[in-house]
Length: 165
Image (cartoon, rainbow, N blue to C red; front, top):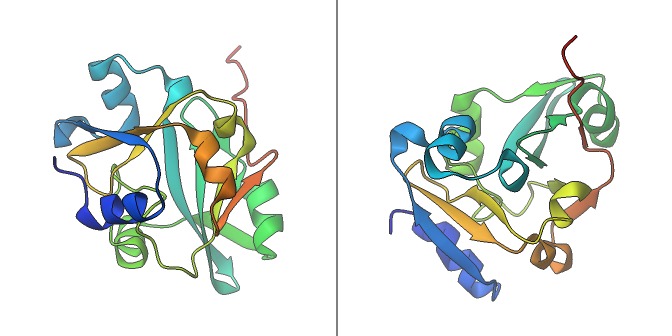
C-alpha cells in the first residue's frame, strides 16, 4: 500500500476501521479520482488547510464533502477569530501537515492543528479521505471521528453550491 505510514500508524493507534485504496497519483485530485474510480462526490471528503492572513498564524484543517464548498469567509473566518483567511498554499500545506495537496488527510497531523469536520460528513455511512500521499485514499466510517480528541464536528462549515442559472 502506498499510504503515508504515519497516517496508518495513527489510525491503527486510534483503533479505527478503514480500508486503503491505491490510486494513480495523476488521478489523486478529487474530481479526477471520483470519475476514474466511480466514487460519488457526495462520498468523497476533502481536507483543506486554511490559514489566516490578518493576523497571520492561525490555521485549521477543514473537512468537507466534495460536492459542497467550504465557507471560508463566513464560518471558518469567525471560528478562527480573524479578519481574513484563505486556502493555504501548497508549500504551507506540505510544511504544516507533511502531506501533499491531493493526498492531505485528517490523520498524522501536528497535535496543535485543529481538525474541523462539516457535520454532513458524519451523516455518511462511509467516505473517502486522503491517505497522506497522492498514491492512495482511505475509506472509513466517518462516525468514528466524533469521539476523537482534536476533531470537532461543525454545523455549516460548508455550503451547498448554488445552481448555475
